[in-house]
Image (cartoon, rainbow, N blue to C red; front, side, top):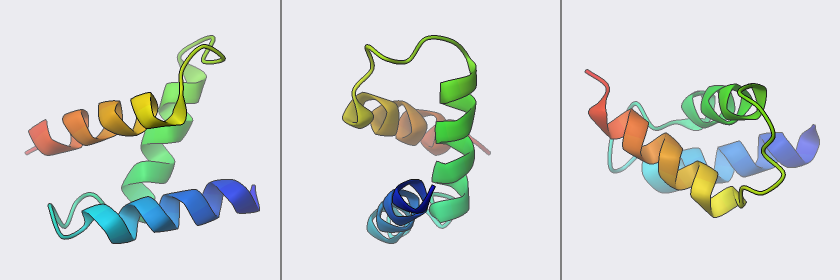
Length: 60
């Protein structure tokens, strides 16, 4: 769990400059939702991050 929190904090710090909505809470929620949709063993973390950013950048 700590690794997950550290990762989402790093992503939030890196991407909040692009959009205030792309913070650590956004990444934590997005990664949890991605993990809940099915078998994610074939997904790489960078693919999940790209998907989260794509979804986040389209959010109102």
